[in-house]
Length: 522
Length: 67
Image (tube, rainbow over all chains, first blue to last red; front, side):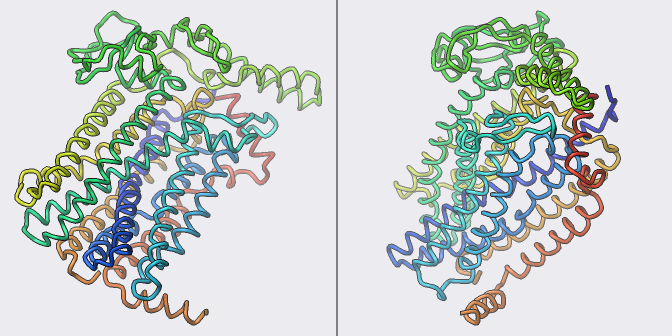
């Protein structure tokens, strides 16, 4: 077995996390603010009210600032695939390449074409054409997100492919099952909706700031109304799709669900923890130490069982159960069967890996009959291929504290946003919000909380699926390129500087434009 | 048609306010990303080591078998 530089994997993962997290600072506002400004322009189109035009242009300017600073930051992730994750890049083949290529084409043609009409076309093209361009810019951005998220969802739930041992890569055999996999559809809607919530938080927060400063009152009230209605709809749908995420995770990635809830020993009628603190003394998945110092359950018995399996009495496996196996799961045709243990999956994975080696040797001497036998063994055991790279059961467990706390922060913030949008909307309609300084300050300070919720959401999704680059098939230690960790540290530092500079630039320009207010020429 | 298009973009760029700063940032960013980072720090690992798809496949298979 090859030995990699001990710190290489950690630095490669840190680098990818840094770039992905910075990228995700820019994307959600583009998705959310884009829809809100399009709604405002639609209101202008329908009513002819110049106030709506002024509001649209103001929010469009902030959209432009965010879009310009954030655009192309995601391309760096593609650089990293080729350099730092070359085994992975080759192994996934066209399955990952095709969605990213479509994303590039869509992003380029739709967004680049219509964004210029959106910004330059005021008073130069017809109102209807301008409105269509605004919507098409936002739809283009959203479709770009679709393809990226389809690729990401495939890594969480690999479907529609077959491994070709001759080319050492997975080949797409069913494009539609990849595109319309339930995980992909849910991930897309959940992620885009989180962007919508971010956009709504941004609009009510900035509007709240104007109200605190007693500036642009009518503009702020109009913006707040649109932001709060849109935010309330978005957060309700976000919670609904969050339920879908929990369901899919429990079916496809039970270890992630167990980590999200700090569940070491499975149980029937499992509850969801509302608040809890993990016990640092718990060192092993199978020791007898209580994983919690304290915890308070949501007072709905069997809620976790229901979310995961749509049955309040269902058994939810814990970390120890997933490693030991033996609990009942459903196969592809819906029949019950005992879950395989870690050791059984590891044995199966080793069979697949040995079969790949045997296939290679047989093909080298043109012994096609033997090669076919190896190929069949490889195919039969391929679903556990990645387990061959794991040495011990603990390798299968993600960072539980990080996943647990991230999940609960995300859910807690989601509930807070639901309350916030409802309260803001109530007082907007009561025409009292103008003088409610405290609520406006809460709205202002909720803008960064939206970003926190988005970031911890991705931590749950990505840290929670460790050690897998591709679920069950390729762990990160087999996916990473064998390059020097020194070079990764250098590029990590360069990215940290570049992205921080971009973020500072964004904040400075954004604050300047906000202070100018909607009456300024943008 | 082309003249109209040209004038549309020319006037659009000319009348930009904050947009000029943003374009400057975009150009600097893209320069750093492609002319510096991609060119010097992010070579495609397999493309720089192997010429054909077959040799890349062989290499990755060895990695999968031996790692």
